[in-house]
Amino acid sequence: MGEVLRAEAGLSWAEYEVHFRLRVAAERPLQMREIADQLLASPSGITRIADRLDRNGWITREIPPKNRRVVRVRLTDRGLSVLETADRTFAGDETQPPAIAPMIR
Image (cartoon, rainbow, N blue to C red; front, side):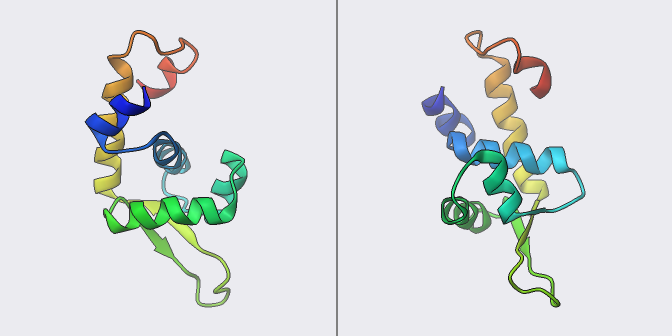
């Protein structure tokens, strides 16, 4: 599935997971630390993923002026479009576990 996701949406599985969580958060930006905790990943690993997503224009980063140690991430319209492409990839995959299918349709 990872190869199909990369070919059709241009996302790795981990990048899809970040996109998905940002969509669930809706208008509330997530802190990089929150994303790392949710994905059980290292902060540096999430930073590397965010670097690529930011370069592609799929996310924006915000640093509050009063606490520059915090980095908040928000999905852009372009990122949402990529996520919708990925969702269609999953919707066409009959091997997808039924428990996940309703969440992305």
